[in-house]
Image 1: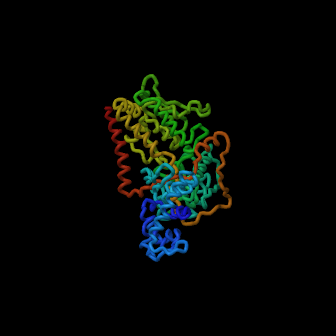
Image 2: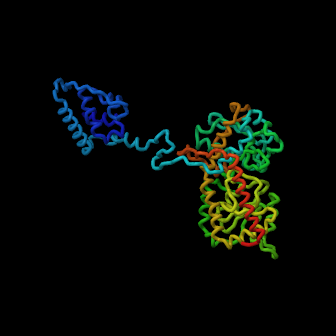
Image 3: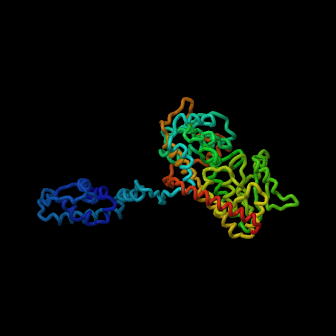
Length: 518
């Protein structure tokens, strides 16, 4: 009888257990009367209710130990009662291993519900969310190939501008290197793609791409005026209005050992803690910038905005010579001023995310380049625009305005910082990569293949600070939540409205500056 009792619990699904009649009622009694086994009952749907119609059960008399029972309900009830009594006694006297009976129910409690975007993972319920708005620019970056698709000829044409070629086939990464890359930009870019493959196994499609690691975008639109030419699809860290470069997250998200900048997964936490050390109202009421003033004309001009004895421009500009070491480059300790300046170098700069993460109101000198997330920022919402043609006066006005309108200045700083914290977390960096590569692969007119000179890339940790940063930025395993859901492309009216809004917000600041009133 114990065997029958345990068989009952093993065959019946969890949802049927509370239904006492369904387990011990008419269906079960009928089964005993007809001589059916518990396995037959479960497979016929008689217990769990999965059958579309009830099972017809024979009402023939039952033979027990060779005796004809005319009223089989009594011995069956007696048998069930004795089984229940026996098991209860066994539990309290430890004759039976209780875990063997209850294990299947605990297991069902923690198994994910397949086919749903929401699933249980031991203690958390995780839901795939909507991607940040800036993901929609993926469609704009790939629009040049929407009609023509991407051919092998196009990819090969990008080779003349590329540092390396990456091919992904069956979830494995292969590289063919063409040229020297400055510092470890290529090392950490490729490392980031390896982590993407680890985070989303089986989700990254087969593809073939060329990558360039210099500062400036190179695929100029003026070289392809009719938009029907063989436009080379070249991946890069930034773009501008005059180029077709496909923007991709830069290497610094996984670390920049040459200047002692930690991987973003760690640095973002450090910056968040650095914010707590000094309240905005207690910070120095000036605009702060530290960096190499020798890279780019805009930075050389910015250096003239330091006080000179005759003029106070409300700016504190600090030249940093990387050759003298990293003792003064701790970014998390630089959230000490109410305002922080962002200025481009040779092209775009990786520093914008660090500057905006400080709760200080970001003063962004007219940018000419964009990276993958900055097109989601709005002037006077996430930062304050600074006129590149009148930098010092423009900075002075912004600081005077902020010190008089402290609540509004703090709000802009806080909004910019929250954007970085919430919409630029590493999950979204990986999701952006995944969506970009997926949309890119949809355009292929050929099947990606491993080129003759390509070598498979390993997840090697290397040595020194490179090893340290790789260990910090290494993903822990496959993601427990699905990638975010991307918005559809902008239509023409939406895109025009967005661009006009940004332009009008910047013009409003220029009008205020011209008036001189704060």
